[in-house]
Length: 130
Image (cartoon, one colour):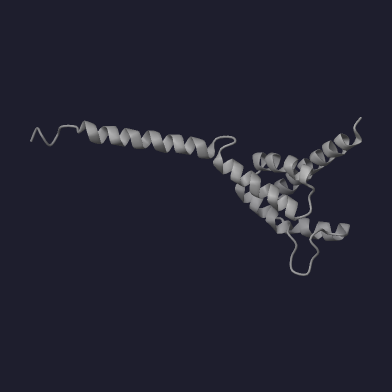
């Protein structure tokens, strides 16, 4: 009976090692700049470029958007993509507003506008070479 209640040091060591490995893996995945954040940022940047945003502005916007918005909010921005029969980039104000109205998350639209305006103005100022 005493044998059955003994703690197995090997089993305990394996369990502790597994916990440490899981914790380290989670840290590399979820930390700022971690694997999950990098994949999300790359996907946002690619989506911006595909939808007509110039590369320097997309490079500026992607990290800011992934920092400020949740995955769900970023997915809601996918509704900005052109629907069948629409041009890739809206050519009129009403076309742009129609696309923005597809998004049912006011905070996501607000952050998109703020980040886009900031990155666009920074790009413009860099281009002026003052």
